[in-house]
Length: 488
Ligand code: GAP
Image (cartoon, rainbow, N blue to C red; front, top):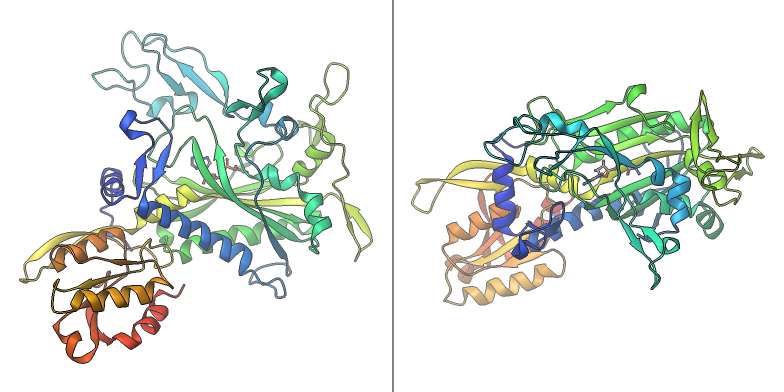
């Protein structure tokens, strides 16, 4: 789609200029790794989340077998809390293992991620890489747990310590029994959740790509151990197809299967869906979503306690008295399959994506520059966001050509009529060319202009953002034309 002229500087500038994304607390100098979504950004991100929720949950048809799926399946949604019982994070392994290695510079006090030393800049001038100034004094790598700590209640005491969730997934695992007993779902089925997650990233970077507060869109798909490989294959393909359908060009998108050395200790298979973000060098890709085959690791951990690898097996980690170091809930989380008469601990396939990274990838993909003739036929450079209509923050803008002759009244009436169905925008300020270009930069797929002819024959001009072609249509037809062209 885009002509490849997107750079991160241009995208960040556009996001600020048009109100997509601002640095959090900017008037106080900002705070690293936190971003606010402005009036257009909030619509864009909501559209990403709504498209995901609709495609994965509400529009899912459990009565038929989707293409490529081993069988029909159920999907349900959940919305669980950000702060959970601290034992959740001990049993899941996050308390002990969710860390990055960091390196401090004793000379300039900067902190770097150990695995990013080579690409990290020393904050001092002249600009050099970390460790390259003569007096740089780097420590050995040390562990840094990424979970944000807080306290619950009035007591400031270790027993009151809690964590902001670093992923939404655990809220679904711990509700496995509740969902089974309160709904009619049977295995195979998926739980879906969208929500905020928090990670105290050592070096947040690349705009919203690596933030400290972000939103995840996660599915925990529970299935029988026998069918889990087939479901893993299904979800990888299904999730790639979702990004393609939203307009991510397949050349910049790839599915990369992890080698055994890269996988987490519990994983039987992990594949990342990656996008060639413009902040990366040629040939490099950044993770948009991970699809993991997690075996029975999660339900077992919450049943028995924190698991560690022992040869080919996962065992409950013992403490010095031979007791579970971090006990699970002790609740039986196994599943009785009344068709086969067997009881087993379900396996989990987890497609886990980020709403912020998806929104960023869609912005990068949509960014384009071209030249279009102005009112006098002189080519003018324009910036245009060629966003998929489902994702575009504003679907249609309505303008009177001039602010007189009854045109504003007709345009406002059309605007009111469309607003009930789509996010529409009314604008009567500035030249018509400027108003079009403003909407092009905002990614609005269509503009409607009321002009002199409207007063005679009730027709208006419809302008297409991508081609800039204009055609006349009667006011009465507008809704059906837009419904057709904005359809997913
Ligand atoms: N439950 C599995 C899990 O959390 P993950 O690969 O750590 O897996 C899943 O995270 C997705 O969440 C990533 O693919 C990414 O889209 C998003 N994500 C993770 N860390 C992020 C960060 N610091 N900033 C923005 N998005 C992030």
